[in-house]
Image (cartoon, rainbow, N blue to C red):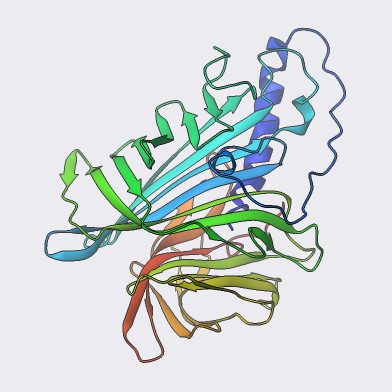
Length: 377
């Protein structure tokens, strides 16, 4: 999921465009009219589809995971997300200063022992030209493979692995992600429905069970990373996604300890009822995409943010065709407040998953949106 962050990003882009209009030569042309890209099932091709898709309105590369330290499993959680948003009003502009695309990035570290969340963010413009060809660009995204640059933050393909470099206010990351399993195509061969209308879809694949190595720094101190640290990648792009009446959504991406992978989500209305649900379970070579109605989220415990006053379910019973899972936040306060930049408030953080036999089954990330305010995409 994760598209909600781009709602506020588009509002910010309009303010930025107005502020930079004086720098554009000549009168502004009328906004370009975009035909909606196809939402038909098609064979995804790699490495091409690991790159950017600028013809689509929204896109993100989303990495989450946990880092073991000597003597402590899941000592730290981490999130690295790069977003791309097409700015329709500038598509017909000829100036190389035109911000035809906006790139936004968000990064966070959860310190489990200290029960603290550290996060930072970036936003910059991209003309849509090839990376490095326009000196006015402070961000870019390659279209032939993963290659996202946003000032001093990056996510690049290096020697077959993904490498992320983040330099934030009080933390940094230099992490390498190695695939241990094949790509997981979500939905119907990579076309994932998010609502009853066939247009409410995204192209969506995941890379679960990524092996993580590298360096985490927190407040100037290196955090030792032990073997067994694991991550998850989601890459998703779309033109339209949410059904009418959507208030928000709940989502989990879980690396199960036996090597399996679990995705589950629901889109809900203002009363908390599911408008749509889905996900998948993969074990070995067997992939089971969940059908609408096969996933339910039942809240078991809530936590109220002292900052936003929003109440979030931080413990869930999630029913799927694979099993009944209890999902527990490792730290209650993993709310991210981006009102100073994007306007979004949401909860996203490290969680543990317990199976129906009450055994620890896996770890991953839980995302909850629309609890502080309704989504307006």
